[in-house]
Image (cartoon, rainbow, N blue to C red):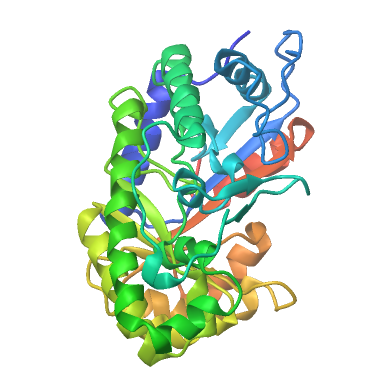
Length: 361
């Protein structure tokens, strides 16, 4: 047996998200995937693509896709879920690797390191059509489109935020000092990276479209138009004035170039920038992540209230109980997205009951 998800199911997903993006869906988006559906297939020998396995280039892309297909065939899709593969498996901010940084997954997680730390005045970024990581991702995308013919959505790989990519090549405190010592050089490189980021984004989408059934990324938010979850994790180390000078202009430009956009607000240190981010008219929503060691999302009702009052969408990643608390505080589930909740197929009846409480059948 293959993946059990029909075109009628895809049509329903697309219509639900269309209403959600237009602000006409009076409930949250909730995805649930049940594992344990016996497909009767033998498990392929190729490992599942992940940050731990992504550097093994000896595995043919067709075998990588076959293993992913096997995993997806074990799923039952409930609520607003759909067959999807998260291509963040080459690490967060893989544009750094596209531009010559060393991709290191020796810990089981991907990190990027510059081959050489150059003075910022000597640093330049150029497109390399022969880059091994860019071409590996392209190869996997080609095979996925050929195999699935639009039944599975492959997410955009985790390209990263422009200043986060730059910080790979100016590690430690270097980039922070550059803001004071070489502000014009930081801005020069920011816009170099901005143009390259969109070149990579468009090139990869040229492979995915029009076969891929839509657009998504590691956030799992579906869109029928080009979209992305933008970020600047570097900004948690700087104040609002520097954020507005060095981060916000590029963020605004990216929002204008994308049909739909979210911002990954990661850590309490970024809350100082929330008002400025909400001032970007073209930004559609915010994903708030409190950070390690901080209280869970449901303990930050004031953040969700501010986002909701600004008329922006948001994403909650705390499970249904946490989602209920946030809805109770802001008074609505409208405009909220909850990414995939994974459960065992034995829980199907209880989960269906919970989904009906949200108006999801």
